[in-house]
Image (cartoon, rainbow, N blue to C red; front, side, top):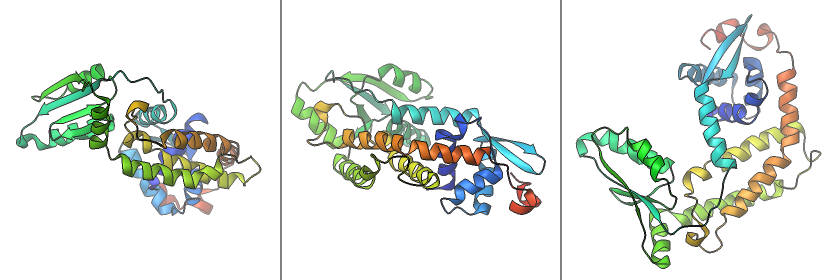
Length: 281
């Protein structure tokens, strides 16, 4: 877990809903729960400020941090993907993106590949990507800004369910994804039935942050295949149920601990952080 990821997750699940402000000493304490050194926390926050992820405000000799609009936009998109999943019957149609971008514009081509992967497309061949979802208009809008690129957004059908499933297996590494889901299930299934008295609030916060970190990559590597295209005994739904139950079970303790930290008086700068250490934040 990179320190930047920890900061993003803490803002995403907690700080943004609790006045969206946290002092450096408080955030340093929270990251120390994950074995992040104070110096690393300061460097991480300094970089995040320069990159536009957070804004700062001085309070005497202390600094407080707030999530910027840029961070909130990313957090909203991530939360939408993780928590708001709607399974729809499949129409049998694929959205297809075909492009021709010359070698001389390799950077543009790589950028397009990253965007298609982010949107859940799988690569059929070097110039063709497919998605089982009807995202034609979204892709046409997104790709309209690609200068001088020969890009086409189409729909296609194979007319054959067996061929459709073969396409899914060809475009996504479903076997590897199955293994990742099963590892997640094995690790987190015991946490789904915890009660608020099962562990101290501090530990509940640590486990809940690690839970989100463990699950959050799935919505970005799982294409969300309809049931008709999913392999037999596909574990995605089971993993999602475990995630949601464990996330809810750990919430009382985690929220309680965060509230306590954010409500506490910050230690003095002399006790916690030398004055010169905050000048770059």
